[in-house]
Image (tube, rainbow, N blue to C red; front, side, top):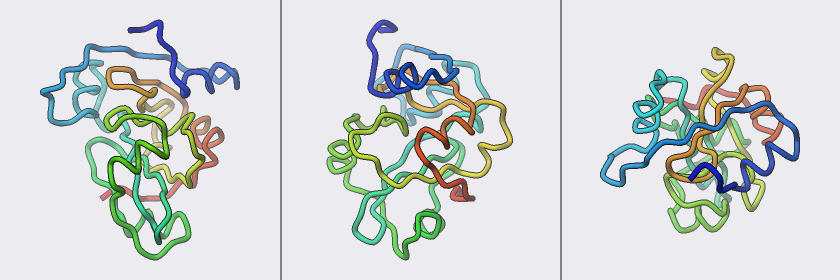
Length: 158
């Protein structure tokens, strides 16, 4: 499992960004991918972030929020300069990002989508997010994630 790279890990290596990969055995019966990652890695869940794809004014955008919260669609729309948002269709999210649901990384997506990172991330030296597949998380400094994804930092978690 640990030997297979993803577009996210390739980007991190290419850009020479300090990061740590954390692999765990994914249980397909677990109800929450993010909560499962927090439990498996022994990390406080507020440091583990999930990547959610939404449709803002008809175009896809990404919100990265702690697994302990939910994406505030109205706040995401405002953060990326839109008015109205709804969760994207799973197939559309997978097509646009190149990742499968539950393993969507904010890094190395097939199409560069507008991305907002919840402001709570700035309270940690490092955060965890998907490295591009279920059972693989990347620990990265929030500032590096913002720089690599050209993210907007805003309070988008409800």
